[in-house]
Amino acid sequence: MTLAAAYDHAAAVMVENLLARDAAEGIGAFIEKRSPQWQDR
Image: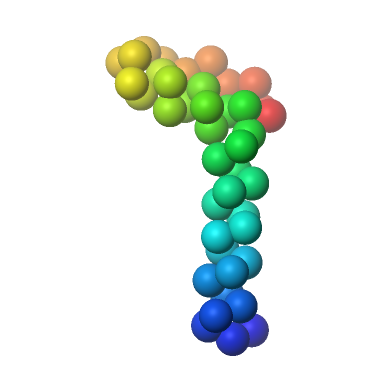
């Protein structure tokens, strides 16, 4: 895999992970200074 392809792949994976419900829960919990309630989603 070329460096450019690796960056493209990593960016796509990061976007996919940020759209997960647990990502939103983790970010919200951090901002609200509380423990996250993970749902494995």
